[in-house]
Length: 303
Image (cartoon, helix red, strand yellow):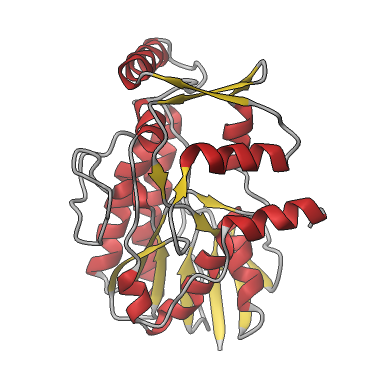
């Protein structure tokens, strides 16, 4: 069997490519070589990929972040996450496709204390959520299996952990609102799902650790594991939202400026309970084998 993994030079795709070597030949499709297998160059924003010989395609390539509305970064995000998906599906030509989406597609205006796959998809607060939703619509229409993880963490993370560390100021981490329960997804659990999902019925599946975490305690433990002693303090949600709107307005009025330091999307993701129901993936035989405790134990060992 030959598995083509797009975005294999990135965090999630790299873990998928390494895991796939245990069961198949691996082809890493993207701008840079992956950690295993043969490399086929592909610019997702411009080209149709060469998937010749692949029996399964796992699509992890994505533009991520929280860019300012109307910025060049937002245009790139659409070119990769939406147009790139269309080009990938064209090249797949009926081959099985596992498309890695995100729980960011879920509508934040509805209760998310127990999110199933039929939760409304809409009302996204940033370009990432909008373009992932548009891309997965194309994938679902083409018969792909779509995975929706939330806040993927683990060794080699280039997004979640750096953003968390950057928000610590003078030994203090400000968080919007009181403590809430949040689903997180160990990258190993996502990689397992990517390889298992080839045999699942077409549709969307939530992927997360076995149980949600208390936000404050989870963040405190992660910071401690990385040598950061920080006091967590709570900011009223309306104050955080007002600050985010102001920061977004400034970024929009100053073309070429950096993305806003605080956004409404970031506030939403931290201030409100979001717990994914993974029963649908479980019914297909998948179960999460890793947890935050395992990650923290690896950190303690220096792994």
